[in-house]
Image 1 (spheres, chains in turn brown, yellow):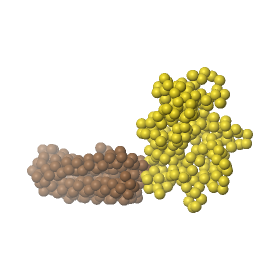
Image 2 (cartoon, rainbow over the protein chains, first blue to last red):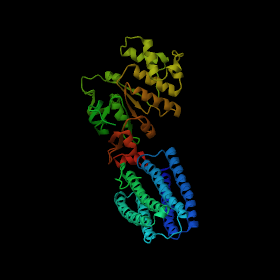
Image 3 (cartoon, each protein chain N blue to C red):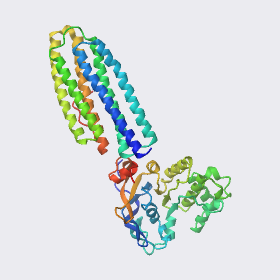
Image 4 (cartoon, rainbow over the protein chains, first blue to last red):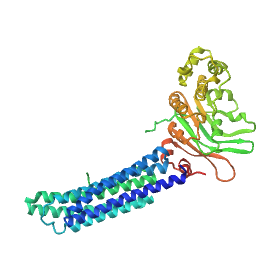
Length: 223
Length: 262
């Protein structure tokens, strides 16, 4: 393969990573809207869409492996391919968190949601999506500075998660008979919190691609 | 991998430059070659790789008008000092060439001849067998030891030349594109052989094949022509092979190993 052809294949692959990220962003937005409207049909569609996300991820993985086998790549090329393999795993896992939310929606009891909950979940999803979008933009552009700055924004999501958790704990205390309902809502918020955590991994891989440094941002929460 | 407190270097160059008449082919090389390691020299055509390799056992002197400046220290001794005998240098630092060049004699004599010249007094049959075994050729030729070396395949001829080189028990084996004329299977055999040989010898290999350098070597020296019209080459980066091929420090190395050079 000529150098120009390899450059094109690498660029197309990174573009497909951005597409994969967009699919997950759309699902994240839809999931909190479907929850707000208690739309179980919509939730089923979101769950089904996860299969498309997985399929797209495997297509990228195959292309990555084909380039590793046939080139084989060196130096920066190798780091891009190694990073793509990691990043698509993170994006797919983020999609799984959203699928988890979609799966919970039909299981919720018909009683109303706590008053502030839908807005706060919207905010968590929006912040997580914004971080994912900018992390992938930085990955595609090789923007080390942005990659180093982004993970700190996870504190915003963690703060919102704290508020949601507090509100749900109060609701559960007032309505102990609805323990299933509130526990499931905590899982929804928890999934959005984990969703945003994964952005740090993508940023770590951007730094690796640019510098070769394998590093880890100190994590604010555990699995 | 932790670095031992005292790393054992077998060859060290100090500001080594090599001239052919007025032409400075290689300029200001400072490098240290670790004992029992495989060191690869890579770089584009015409950058002085082979010239540098040949400086390690004074082979360049066979070219009229060539001379070296600076030092090549071998076990601490300057190879270019007046009292040093170049024949003795080539005994202790052997060489395997790009094209296999067995003598037009029997397989047995190809091994025995050099040993005899160097005054080997021991059991010649034993030396021939040991050398051929070390070169991973014994099983293929043990029944035809008195057939001509030229009757062997290209890959076998190259292993015969390696056997001939190690028969005189050098410390260092220089290899100049040893597999470039071989098919992939024969190449693989040479590469496997190198891994065996490094237990007892230090190997320095010049190769155009970056994959080969990445596969076989522990350390890699990247050579490049200096800027300007001098056409003089030098080592621009010398590091662990895994580093050179995953995150080189020099942009020119990056460009070369990723195929952007030229």
